[in-house]
Length: 106
Image 1 (tube, helix red, strand yellow):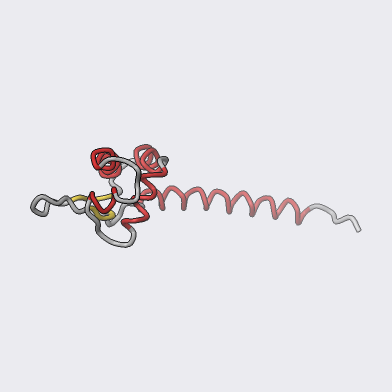
Image 2 (cartoon, rainbow, N blue to C red):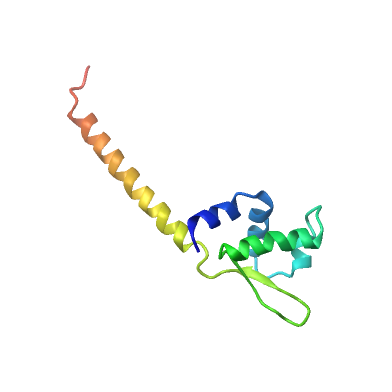
């Protein structure tokens, strides 16, 4: 999985809604298609994007293709965000030091 494909997949509101639905547990393609005003093939295309991005997994169960969130789907995003948080904390710490060193005007 890479961040570009992950963020590209997450950029679409339908795909985010599908992930939200899957956060409640496994669902079939038909279950996922039900709340949307689109065909089952259109939902399947969204699922392929999510699967290629490593955000969901699908398995074969007879004629069904149940989907679920991938176990470590967001680990790379979490690492990237942690790096950004660390950088921001350093910037704020430096800003605090500069402000503390400034003479106060009463």
